[in-house]
Amino acid sequence: MKINKNIIKMGSKGIKEEARLLTIERIKVASDNLKISIGSSEYSKDEILKTLENEDNDFTREIIETQLEYLRNMASGAIYQELE
Amino acid sequence: MNSTLLLTRPNYDIATNYLYFWSDDIIKYTYGFKILDLRGNKANYNDFTSYMNKHKPSVVVFNGHGSDKTILGQNGEVLIKSDVNDDLLRGKIIYARCCEAGKFLGPNCVRKGAKAFVGYKKNYYLAYSDSHISRPLQDPVAKLFLEPSNLVPKSILKGNTVKLAYEKSQKAILKNIHFMISTVASDDQRDAAPYLWANKINQILFE
Image (cartoon, rainbow over all chains, first blue to last red; front, top):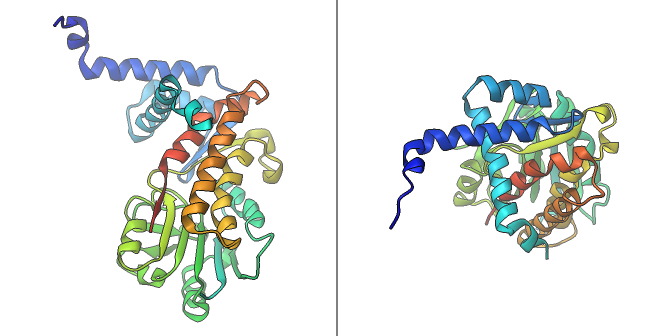
């Protein structure tokens, strides 16, 4: 079995960084008019972007996980299958 | 069964303001239920406890903020805390439209005798359009989040089982996501889809 050495080198830290960058790009192209209420806080696109670019905390991890979960389910077809 | 529904709807920030106004839709048709509406400042610990003890509602609907062990009322006042006063919910059907109560409080209540609990095991997301903030009922983004979540208590009022009410809500969320990823959705609506999908995954039923 061939092992991709690059993946091993990159490890979970690299994957995490790729996920963060992917999320930033997705948020960048989102509507300026959209706001999200999470818990007792409200976030604009700029506020989400600023936090994603500068911090690693529960909020940024949650936003990244929400975007990835959605993409995973789009890619697997789960969202479409269930709609049928 | 005592056909009484108690609704809490605080109103002190943007999120609770949306939940407050969209809760009108829940109790628009009562189907013979007596409705106890603890709105705004009435959504406080003393009034809530007194109404629960006096009227013994069969269905309790919470709106507002929360955590894995608490459900909050006006200005963040604790209404229910796990293993402190959650015995108030014994025998009840509960819908908690708030963050995280489905993680511990909900299943714990059911273990202790609540009839059923529907809530969210992680954060409850509400996306809204900044240009509609002063007109929450006309907000085309928030509508996609709040209509399907209203379906849980509305279906229960209609006489459906809690399981069916939950399934109807899940289906309505999917229908809205279907719309959001279609070409007829606005940019705001499309970009809010990941958050509504998260609500679908996090919405949970215990009975």
